Image 1: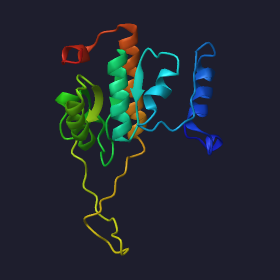
Image 2: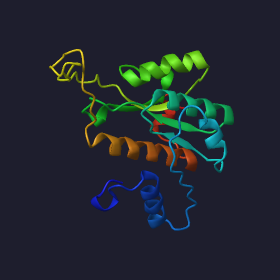
Image 3: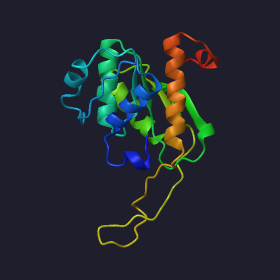
Amino acid sequence: MAWQHTLGQPKSEVMEHLVRDINPDCQVTALHAFLGKDGLTDALAALPRPDYVVDAIDTVSQKLAIARWCQDEGIPLLSSMGGANKLNPCRLRFSTIERTDVDPIARVMRKECRKRGIRGLRVLYSDEPPIPIEGGTGPDGRRDRSHSILGTMSYLPPIMGQMIAGRVICDLAGLSNELDHQGWR
């Protein structure tokens, strides 16, 4: 979605135009808004009921609010976990949150899902240990090893997005594959 001609445009508008370019008959409801954890359920409830929800949000509180809403509404959800400081896309896995390991975002999500009674959250995560990258600076501006730098390789988000899109299409179309035999369903 990021091209020179889309610089400065909201992602929601760029994606809406892209979807309509691919299939003009597709029904698109684009919402250009920041969905904070407060008011998120009201904002989602005001939209047309989705067949499926994909969570690609970086903030845990919003991820949890969406997971709760989807569970309460009986809407399938696939949530993307973290790609920061990972290099190997071959280590990306589909699972339920309870079966994840290694991924720091998944660890926090597992704990918080247990607290909130969110069960069976389906996720895409990486079982690759994050590469420790030092080089942050402390309050005095000097190099401080206690401040790490989080970064995501440019190729990981599109790969994760394509994997998620493929899984959603298979789910919506009722297509079975090897994921169905790994405790996915």
